[in-house]
Each structure stands twice: as C-alpha cells, then as structure tokens.
Length: 108
Image (cartoon, rainbow, N blue to C red; front, side, top):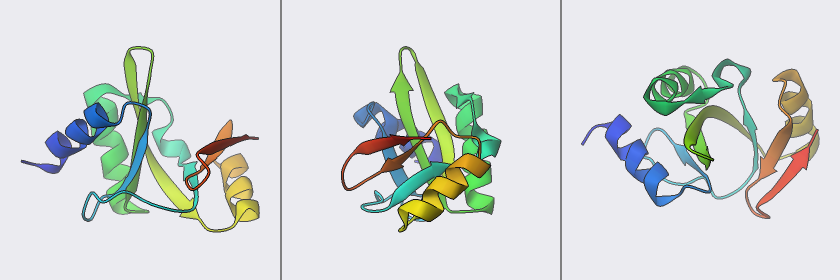
C-alpha cells in the first residue's frame, strides 16, 4: 500500500481530524499545530497530493479533517511554544491553531 492510500485510510478512520509524521505515519502526540499557507483549501485527492508534496519538502508532518462532505488536508508545522505557534499561525494566515494535548483550537 502506498502512502496516499494509507493516508486515505487514516482519514477514513479519523474524520474528526488527525496529524501524522510522513516518515512513518505515526500520530503526533503533542504540540501546537499550524497549517502552512501553501496548503490552504486543499481537499480531495488533488489536495492530498499537494499537501503531501509540501509536507515532504518542509515539515514532514501532515494533517486533515472532514468538514461537511469535504476532507481537508494540510502540511503542518509543530510548535512546543504557544507564542511561536500563534506568530506562525498569523504569518500563515490561519484562523486558528490547534493544541494536540488539550484538543483545543485557539482562534487568531
């Protein structure tokens, strides 16, 4: 099974959202998650390919979630510090950042 097929399986199993390392597809367990601007509005198969391409060239981390009938994909950056994550979120024109341990969104 290739990485695209496996990511689709992970998405199917986790429609409320997930974040994984592209190197081993293991879940990210801690940190503040910030989507990269290059992958805003990436959805469906084409969005997955684009988000994966960006993730492989940059952070090696990919996330996604389902909203209504669309599955959104993002190459993401992980921060241990909320202040740095907030700054990056603003720079990447995000409406929110996500904290994995608490399962909370922080709106920017």
